[in-house]
Length: 123
Image (cartoon, rainbow, N blue to C red):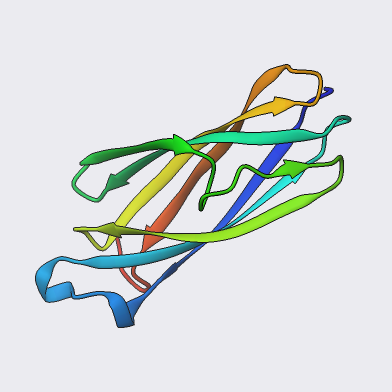
């Protein structure tokens, strides 16, 4: 595979920013995007699907990530952190990045589902 970008995500519950009595649960997530392909590639846009514990779905689409559209050379990584707010103690996020390689070929880098969960809660 010539174009291959992998995405790893680690999420954390932010108790200090959450207000459980108001059904406000705040999570951060740290993303590592790695170009494991043979050509440089640029991240053009993002598409997130956020699902809370009540199956309510939010979609977030837009250019870049945190205001950036990074170019990644083969073997390079880009990291960033962001956040999400849910009305439930648990949920999931998944999505994709629209990428373009240096030869102009567009491709998708999938973001596998990951949990957003208050620690020690059963869902």
